Length: 385
Image (cartoon, rainbow, N blue to C red):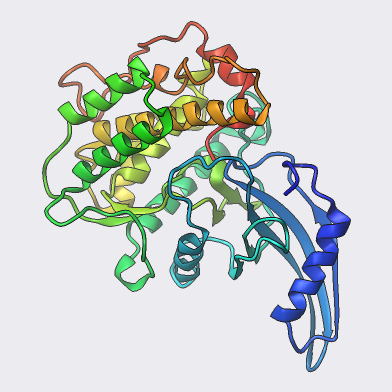
């Protein structure tokens, strides 16, 4: 499989044309055109956009599609499962959650060099990660009231996910609490397993401290079990011209767990784009306290343990950044001995609050931050998938 951004598009068009004959058996004329790869995207998968036109039989048509192709890079997480994600997304298509229409799964790597799933292409605007939307781009150019509307529509999408009746979906293979295990206990177990897998016996003091904090502050109480998107951030949302969310992307780490899981990632992600880069958030964005209150209003739930779930996402996010650093070194994208992994960029801005600060408190600027801003800006292309 070709490195990201270097795929032979002419060869891909020929391969897709042959492959689509099996998906559109009544068509006698199939043409694939307009192949393109986005300049930015997630770490775990390569995106390939294309247009297919067909005729013959009793139908003809033209449609823009996207193929999400697994990459040759070492996996970001220990259990990538395209079939599991495909089955979940096909089921989510029947809910109120806005995602692209999921069409076909192909597990034969001979077509495009790796397994892939195909979906309808959704055209719209996505808040940038590189450069981040807090530094430049269309989000900052919006009027303040439009920024507020964009942000609120993002929160509405989180509420739609958490209030989806997952009992009617195919959730086979999704991580979930075990028998007699609370949702928080399962998340701490996942964080520890992920950390041990990613570090390969090495020690990272800040990650170890983050995991210890989670164990010390774990809410060992029963919580509702809801669907979690797993990567709930502005950079994974496609907005239309009216700033409505028309697609929620990247469900690789979807799980069943606390209703607060996705809110925790949303809050941590806005911190990485703000505090983590020493940049102010767009002026139309509400405060953390207002965000939590609005989420509670939209979901009809109380964010009782949000400090824990934001910290959980900080630990997992920092582990992912460390993992990205390791794999970029292996791929030759960073020189041997580069300290991206060792510096724990994400967790530097994920310090626990003062005891008793509560869910509406502001985050203090704490932790090792002397090199965070400049270095994270330079490596933003390796942002979490």
